[in-house]
Amino acid sequence: MGLGRTITAHQSLIQPIADKYPHVTIVAPAVTNGPPPNGIQFMKDFLGGCSGCRIDAVATHWYGAADIENFKNHITSVHNESGGKAVWVTEFASWEGDEQFLKDAMAWMDSVDFVHRYAYFSVEASMTAGMSLNNLGNTFANA
Image (cartoon, rainbow, N blue to C red; front, side):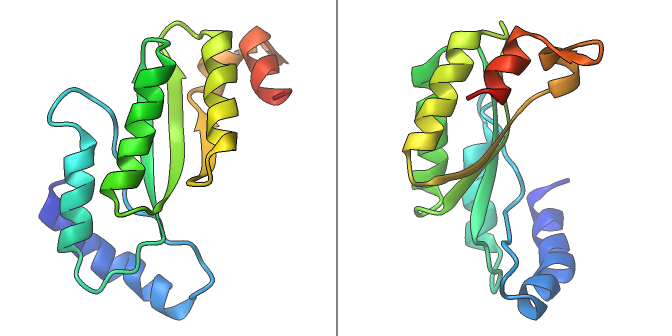
């Protein structure tokens, strides 16, 4: 969906909910850290173009090598480029399924005041073995 259609959909479908229910958190469409042009520019264009829209938080995804500095840089950039909005990391994962990366990422997100929510991707494919949690799943569950 292009930027214009995304803005129109938000204005016609989401903004009426924001107007009717002021206590509901309204989150911008999720963007990712993909190769340029990545989602941060789309997010900025959406926020700048969605006239009259209430946006309480922004959502992002992050996937990549187990590089905690790259992860932190992306999440911090999303926060800064959104004008300081709260960030929901609605999907994140290292390609390697690295337990230390997961520990470091969660500890960092828990330590900053601008990350309000986060979820690992994908629980079924990477955190379980049958009906049980694997090592990565246990790391997430016991953090």
